[in-house]
Image (cartoon, rainbow, N blue to C red; front, side, top):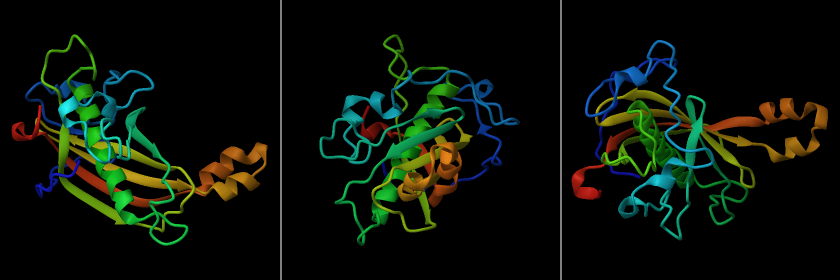
Amino acid sequence: MWLGAGTRSHGAAGPRGVRAVAADGLREAAVIGHSGRMSSNSAVSPGEAFQDHYPDDVAACFGCGRLNPDGHHIRTTWDGDQTVTRFTPAPEQTAVPGYVYGGLIASLVDCSGTGSAAGAAYRAAGRTMGDPNDTEPPLRFVTGRLEVDYLAPTPMGVELVVRGQIEEITARKVVVALTVTAADAAADKEADKEADKEADAAAEAAVARGRVVAVLLPPTMGA
């Protein structure tokens, strides 16, 4: 969700580290900066996305709100210590014939970033999203800063995969670096079964990279 606050990222750790500041219920012990590995608490149950557990009054985002019948319904979850979002663009999301329009890529980076921030904050706090016994306030994030670099034209007709890496967690902010890749379906079709894995790896190429500085939802905006 885009807030447009113009927040600047600062003090982020290197690619293998996560900078953590313990405050307001986020436990520094849950994030280990030297190895980049976080606690084993998944934050969500298997098969569920972070966005599945947004409070109802802040679940109408056009990009990721589950209660918006006309939205993209972007869904993000953990894949090890990274987050992953999978999305296949619809034909109407075309820029020029055969290629996805850039606004959709920005939306994928945006909502994957804020979803990743929520998952990381819950994991760092040792909480599980959707836990009926959790009486603490929900951790919902909005976008303070959004950066997107377009690396290559994004083809239509293939699944897009957004992978997020948590770079920094503080009491009210999470910084997430994200990469968008597109699998070349044509190459997959021509690959024989024995070489499928190699073909998949070779056919997947980054089309965009981004960074989201996500901030805790201001009290004036919802729950």
